[in-house]
Image (cartoon, rainbow, N blue to C red; front, side, top):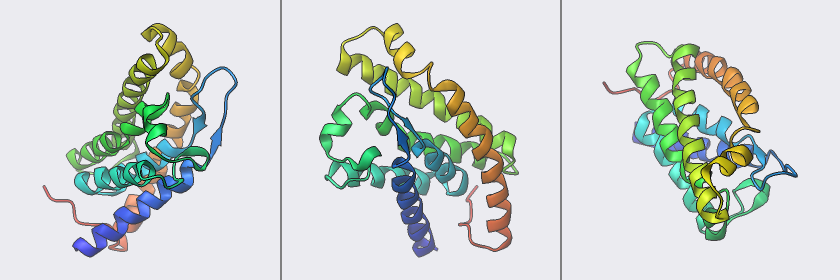
Amino acid sequence: MKTRNLALAAIFTALTVVFAQIVIPLPFTPVPFSMAVFAVYLTGALLPMGWAAAAQAVYLLLGAAGLPVYGGFSGGVGVLAGPTGGYLLTYPLMALLVAAAARAARRKTWAVLAGGMLCALAVCYLGGSLWYCATAHVTWQKSAVLTILPFLPFDLVKIALCAPLAAALNRALARARLLPEQRR
């Protein structure tokens, strides 16, 4: 079972790398639009808590080691120390929160998963905007205007698409016995 969990965690790390490359730079903020959090949500929705957090921690470690896994094929500690580093650093906690919501529920419905994803998004916004305050030397209000408000509609659409997809994947993969057992 550990081999399966390890393989699944590696797959979700790789999925995050792929989705992180879908970025659209925005002219009014140093934070680009990214699909990476979609992969983070899927990781939490489909893996047990510890493995979900580990998959995202490995993603961060690969990038910190200099591999070009972050958005725009970037990598290195400098990215983590830069204006978007706070968002990246929340990924393991985000995956953990979605997985915790999924574990707490008897069934992994889209509503349960969407609730976990909303909590994860709040953590992402908090960590990312506070980090931006520190690196850009701006007030939290200015940070929120630049790093949260423009992204909120798009992030809600990501959740609206990801939650039903994750619920359907959970059902299909559970029937095929391809998901790890969730311990209670």
